[in-house]
Image 1 (tube, rainbow, N blue to C red):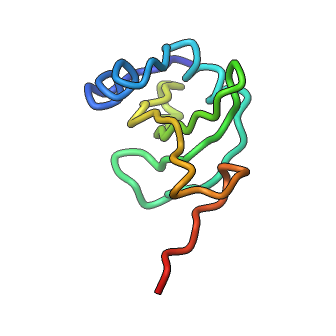
Image 2 (image 1 turned 180 degrees about the horizontal axis):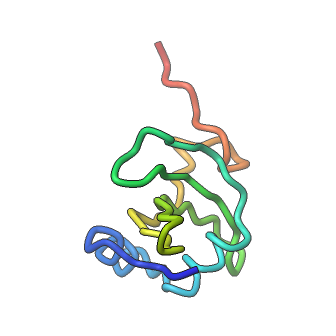
Length: 94
C-alpha cells in the first residue's frame, strides 16, 4: 500500500516529531478506533498504535482503486481528551 500525506498531516507530524515510518507502523499494525464511512473523497478511519512506547493516532482515507492510504493527520492523543487506553474519548462534563 502506498502512503500519500496531506500538507496538514506533514505539518502536524513535523510539529509532533512523528516520522513517516511511524505512520506506516500505525496504519499497518494499529487498532481501528473509529470509521468515518461518509468522509469524502474516501471513507476514512482513525487508528491507534504504540510506536516506541508512544501512543499515536492516525486518520487516513483509503483509495482501493490505487491502493493508496491518504493520511489526513497524525497526532499524540491528549490524555485530557482520551481515556488511559487512548481508544475511548472521555465524556464531556455536563
